[in-house]
Amino acid sequence: MRKGIDSLSGLVRNELGKNPLEGDLFIFSNKRKNQLKMLHWQQDGYGVFYKRLEQGVYELPDKDKIEMEELLFLLQGIMRKTIKKHKRYEVNRCISST
Image (cartoon, rainbow, N blue to C red; front, side, top):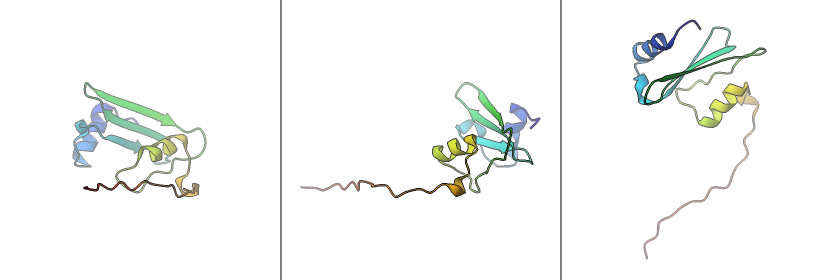
């Protein structure tokens, strides 16, 4: 967790093969998974967010991309595996020509 903005953006570019200037949010953690550092390009410069849990660990996602809801759960230390999602009604939008 000692890396700064330049080192983190270098990791994104060289290790992940992604462009950190595209506006994606990149999440890094320490080995114990109780600290997170996030890197985000914001049109005029980088933003870095750092958070440390005093108890427990973060449950990091297994996939490359996560939804905003999952990010919020992650930052609050909520375990996604224990959350039960209920079915929600979705409107099917059909375009009909008359």
